Image 1 (tube, rainbow, N blue to C red):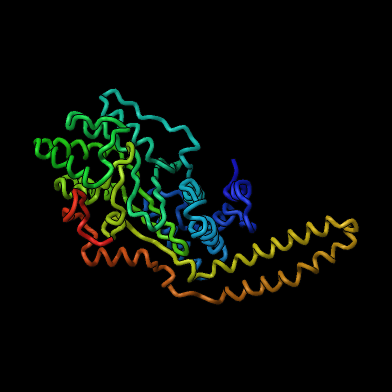
Image 2: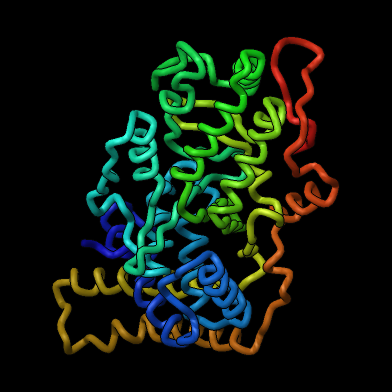
Length: 386
């Protein structure tokens, strides 16, 4: 199995050398032995991120190297939209917390001899866990760019959700639920047919048995990273509360189906009542100073290749190679040493993305609320500004 560092070198023509992430993470925990590397809750993960970001602001070079990796390889705007995959972020979180990405192991179906609903629930739950730990704790990870306004919650089988409640909606590839308006029309028909209680009970049963793992939301914001930690109970209760309140409240949280995957409103689940936030503005840290090492090492590689390619190269003139590199690298080390006495203000922990979330929350625009029909057409929008 390759480390993240090795995979980065193998899978791309990286411009500069990337410090081996695993070594930096090991050193971080050695220097912060009071932290639980293997989490048992979102609270454990929050403590790690808080310490990591706080140490980085104090120019701890081990912490800076980790956030430098995050910036260069996970959030950088030139890569975030095209090159950074959900698996890249899962690998990083798994390395940071010593977990295992579940794709690397065979996922076992839960045995079920009850009925088709339980069979779908078993399958859907099996697909939700992205990282598992040797203490039986499991974590689901959702990652996306800041422009994405919804969360793809993965499989939530409509065959099971609407079984014996609605006809002609039992099929993964069925169309007709690709918008809020279509969702609302269907929900109102269910209510008019006197089956809303049955539907709510089915939705509650599925939600409680499918979304059993805590959630980490990783938002790639270019020069910012925003991480939201959501306890599974709060996540489930928010969904169930919305649906239990009626069709119009249900679609203030539920967006649409895409295939057999259900998509939900993002920002409601980022509110302080539901999630815990930790963020970092990379521009307000000194992590980019570490790129100087990458530049110098690339120079050393270049001059070394030029040196050994020369017909006259030998150990007798090895000192000539070192002198070429030595002066420049001394300046880099001097620059880095000077950073050790320079602390940064804590406003580096404030991101514009999360500030906008807080503004929406304080103005009561981040809550489960009624829907209002637009003046034209049959589409609906949430009565809030996002």
